[in-house]
Length: 251
Image (cartoon, rainbow, N blue to C red; front, side, top):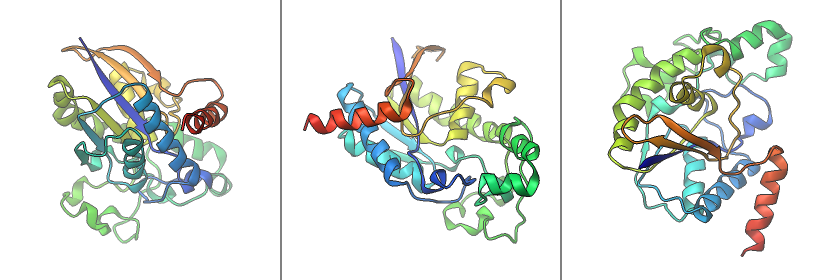
């Protein structure tokens, strides 16, 4: 028997549209992002997916994506666990900055290193910065020394993998069917250890917004047997628009 796990990056956010570094900043989904999440939910329903429990981060764009998707899948009743370990990579002092403007300020090479190097951190926040996570009441129960002020992808992996081992893996092995709504980098970290992807290759993997990624995992070992995006096609935008049209035609 194979276990099924569904991972989903949140729908497009308003800062995705503006090409800003978002990190732990709480921003809303764009209109397109809401549509992506709804289409994902209906697609899950049409393909017969059923879940026992859902996990998401502490950030609204992932939480809202999950809610819209569960509405579309007619599964809003399942338990939802929100945990900061699934948050996006913390981009430190880059958060809120436009990527093109950052290139002008710091240089193309430096920004590329901050974005793509596996173990290099961005400029760090100070504890006096308004963006410091300890200033956000949702993290009041987390020891201050555990709250990041800027993370590399390796740092993100170092908080996601223990959560996988302590919470997510045991849930899967117990037979629960999971859907996880998270972020590009927290999911990229998960893909790294699920598929044993090298440090060099993981930085180039892109995860599309609002498109459920299905993993079929071997019983006991959780070795990856198969993986696929539920909304396929090489042209992401065209495929998404076609999916919306097909859903409305069926109503």
